[in-house]
Length: 357
Image (cartoon, rainbow, N blue to C red):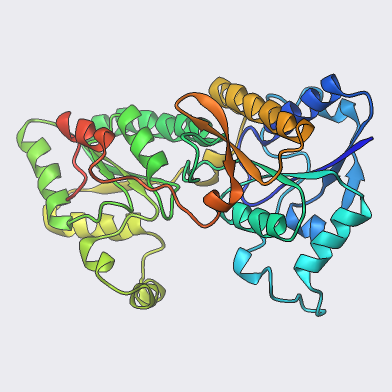
């Protein structure tokens, strides 16, 4: 009898269910005797022993369903070694649940923080296999994460819809896209949606350069300008601050997000009327796009193969279009950011997109 636990951790996204389905269907197809335990609400369920035995019927019809049938929660890695309010050792509690269920492997779907904890559990002796989930596409060791392309589609649709109203009214529009630390989502949606200016965390902007880009379009007879702005976009001045100084500045800011600060500055420099659109959590929601359904199914099937081969301590990733296993120790704690000198940035600049630098 093979006994597997599975959990989804961190922010939800499209294709979590599709990825779990890939794991489970492969195991059911390859083995007669397998039990799958769903750990509820991510690591919280593992800590507090919230789980249930899953039935194969629960994975029927979920390929196209967004969110996660197991629920999720955020459990910051930096607090994993800190006892809870009742003095419970969280790491020991997670290990206890694993051993209580007599699991052969725990499958974990999540992003960067999730992978740090997954690696910790692997180092503690548990058999762990992970799948890369995030709309940010910022997990080191894989070219693509599931959820990313679905989010790109939604953010691009938002920019597409803004085009018509921006053109009609001759306005400057800012579309704020998710991404605190990395700008892959903003970059791809910005290019796909025809944004004129793209601001990402990896390329600190000069507000005067941003204003100049808007004025150049106006002089060229363009009636509107669209900015795709990552929520973690940062000015050159702010980028020069220490983390502590920048946090203090944000605490004192009168603006709810970077887009509103940008709008105020652009208005002062150009006199233009600015409008802001924030798609927000819609970028995480809805059904996974066909691309995400395919890669999440492939990831899930590959994870099942690792389990069947008793190869633990790996994340399933995609490298050059092929599914590969990547050691968790190499993934944990690393962020895949945009190289400001990479080809996609150069190509975007070649077609006239400004990055405010």
